[in-house]
Length: 204
Image 1 (cartoon, helix red, strand yellow):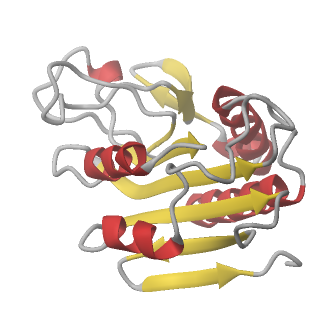
Image 2: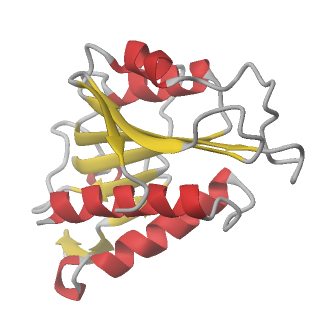
């Protein structure tokens, strides 16, 4: 049940971004909005777990990675959902810092290829201890409606084939959304993984 709620929330969240891309000023605002929507979609009796006699919300912001993932130190995931029933990675302490994760969602807004490539590398790492792996990669393009927008001429803007080449041979699902008020790029939403590119209709 939780898996379907997460997938449906991701899809609806991305569709809402395409329709109304100015709801949040920054990527961090998107994190907060997604957290709120996911929390609301999960039934009340499923939102919390018990870990070592303590009440814990299954959705976490900035939960640490269980390993350094080939970096100098551990990093943090944008949004994580703790596995239910909870279980800690063996041999790690304190155990609350090393719980197995049902899902992780990494975000990027107006980011380039290296940002997405790094998100996918970390998510697909053998020591990520994440079951379901998602990257939400969004673009908001305009003639400077906001300084937070991407220029139509930006070299950061990827295509669906660019994303497919990055995600192939991994088990990560990328939700790639683009809204362009200059009409120089095709606006839309696509789910991209090692099986190919799926167009998600905006009128769903």
